Image (tube, rainbow, N blue to C red):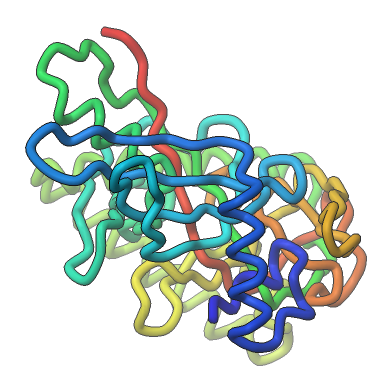
Amino acid sequence: MHKYLRAIGFSNVSDSEDVRKLLELSVEQNDTESIMDNPGGKSFGELKKEFAQDIGICSRGEIQKEFFEFEYYYPYFDGRGITTYEDVYIERQAEKECYMGACDDSRVGVTIIFYLQNMTEYLKIINDASSTKRKSSLTLSALSVDGKILFSVSKNQEQVKQDKEDSINRTKLIEKAKQGDEQAMESLTLDDIDTYSMISRRIIHEDVFTIVDTYFMPYGMECDKYSILGEILEVAIRINRLTQEELYIMKLSCNELVFDVCINKKDLLGEPMAGRRFKGTVWLQGKINFMEE
């Protein structure tokens, strides 16, 4: 049973029988379908049932003689806007027909790994030699079942301006270091030493979350799970039409990376507002945006 079902408003789904009934509903009353025809073998398709705007369950499986043979499902949340224009690398998982994406964005400092949402669209394009569509950007989104709200760190305009400049300079240094610039590598090392010294001094008298504004770190042993702390830019509430549970949709800025997070109101400690911060663990999903060349 997928624990992230509660993130989209199904906190009362408690056993396999409840999951079976929910999946039957989502397949039989699906809103959209996407099928990838395979002339040399079985066709593969996905059926989506939306329970709130941009939120629902996606069921995937083989299409045999117009019948859908269910294989697996996942709860989805479609994000808005563009998160990054960096190159994305896609790889198939070993145990089933699903794909993971990876993206190196200098603003974050780690490789971003996510669960690919528009798998059938991706497969259609790469398998069609005549297609003129190419990867253009990436939209990330996340589901969370554990989070809390923190107050923002008080800063004046000069400090905010300086932080932005430091972030831009660090991003440029990381790009140069990737290209083998030894001077950039040395500058980054010295910056890390200075940061460590500053934190060591301040942590004696201050809480760590007054020193650290935001972070984006891998969480546990699953590659697409992350522990994040980000500033809330926008907040919206959506209602699961089947269960009537309230869901918070928060647009976050996390290490200069902007993406949406969906969490059940029951699982969020505190009241989210623009300017405050969200701290929690998330399951990262992503959609590759394609455009004509």
